[in-house]
Length: 263
Ligand code: B12
Ligand code: SF4
Ligand code: SF4
Image 1 (cartoon, protein in one colour):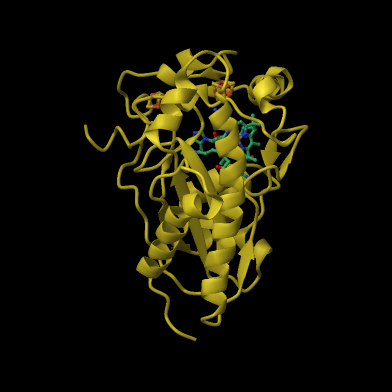
Image 2 (image 1 turned 135 degrees about the vertical axis):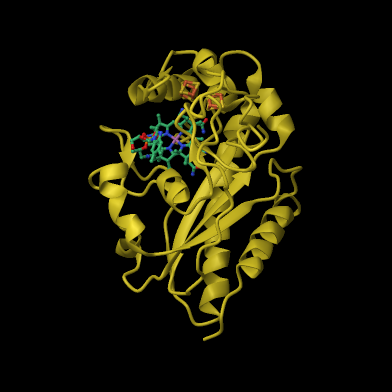
């Protein structure tokens, strides 16, 4: 078994995402991905208290796993700009959701194959739609894993803000390889409001008032995502799982960067 360098995994992720538009014959919605790793030490024991009492331990995916890998694929500015308009998500936001979930699955697979070729097994999990529709929580939360692995911090909008912002999607996997800790966030907070500054723009942007300074009504948000899918004709050819809105992340101070890092 050979030692794995984090830079090799980061390069693989960057090249994989960069090659996606040509592979699909499209312009593509993505910027350069971010990737972190963390050793599976006792910090992960806190997940059931921190996220959801039935949250899995990373080693429930693969008992022999030694490290966690989490990546974030940021969206291009143009897509986010387009989704800012009006109270409903644009067609491309829906398309980007579908294509990015697929990309996350295949990038996870590519990372697993790279590791397998060097003698390490991996445990994979999907990008989304692995949640309980009654309580609107998943037993595997990419956001909480990303927080513990120091890829980002929670925003008032309850999404994860990374050094490349919050507009994009997360993926995670575990592996037997000993990768060590390779974090990317270097501030205690990444949300202006949580850092004691003026903001709250995400709260104002939500068309159904699902967000408050210290709370999130998941049901209101979920109902809105379902309504969007039901009423928007331009989503009719997209899968039934296309649950999107994203107004709370569109052209916010935290959309493309960690705004606390520049203070
Ligand atoms: C269920 C789910 C939903 C549900 C419920 C929302 C939710 N629970 O997050 C619904 C359907 C409403 C939803 C909506 C959306 N979702 Co969603 N969803 C998920 C899913 C499948 C599971 C999330 C989960 O169970 N989290 C665990 C619970 C406990 O977390 P939570 O509800 O956010 O509440 C906790 C945190 O907010 C936390 N918290 C708040 N502040 C702080 C501070 C600290 C220090 C700590 C430790 C914790 C903390 O406290 C709460 C309790 O622990 C994930 C994919 C996955 N498997 O991870 C995607 C995911 C969270 N969704 C995502 C997105 C983008 C969206 C939407 C924008 C829809 C869209 N694509 O247009 C909206 C955004 C709504 C919002 N403002 O958060 C992305 C988020 C990317 C990011 N940058 O964070 C994810 C990660 C999908 C992905 N693969 O990228 N989603
Ligand atoms: S819009 Fe402002 S308050 Fe909302 S998460 Fe981003 S920085 Fe925090
Ligand atoms: S995704 Fe839309 S409905 Fe849900 S919290 Fe954000 S702005 Fe509100």
